[in-house]
Each structure stands twice: as structure tokens, then as C-alpha cells.
Length: 110
Image 1 (cartoon, helix red, strand yellow):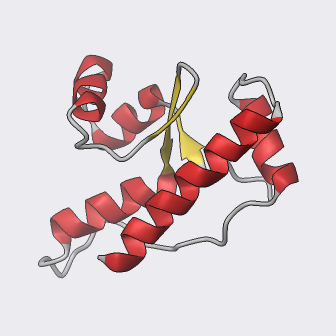
Image 2 (image 1 turned 180 degrees about the vertical axis):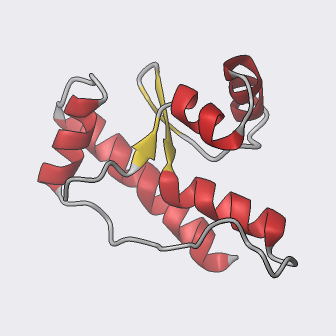
């Protein structure tokens, strides 16, 4: 798996067409789904896609398509964390996986 599963706050802000401070405020207000690992904030691509689809679901011209991936393997999580500059100890991998599981569970319920 070569494609990253998450955006940084800055990347998500660009995708949404908002400023970085606005993105941080939206995260603080829980308007943008996110995972916190230590001080790092990551936005799962699938959750952001779902958020955008929900905003446009009544439109025939939905701007993106939802694809819910399987949960990443331990090796994939380690690579994702390393790519994000996060130390790859067991607690970080566990936090990432739990965060992804919670977001995917919430998405499946919608």
C-alpha cells in the first residue's frame, strides 16, 4: 500500500479550500473528523471524503466518491506514522488503529 490514508491539517485545509487556522478551529469544534496521536493531528482521507459526500449527497454532482478501505496492517500503520514523522512505538500504532476503527465504525452507521 503506497498511498497514504491520512492528510495533515495543512493538506486537509488545501483540499477543503480553507485556511490552516480555520482548519484547526474546525478540528477543535469537531467539524472535521480527525485522529490525535500525541501532539500530531491526522485527518483520515475516507472520513474527509464522507464528510464532503454528506454535504453534497442531495446533489447529482457529488464532488467525491466514498471508498471505505480495510483497516491497515501493522506494517502499513508503521510506514504511515514514519512518513508523518511520528515515532513508531506500539502505543502510537495502537492509537492510530483505534482511531481508524472508530471513524470507520461511525461511517458505517451513517
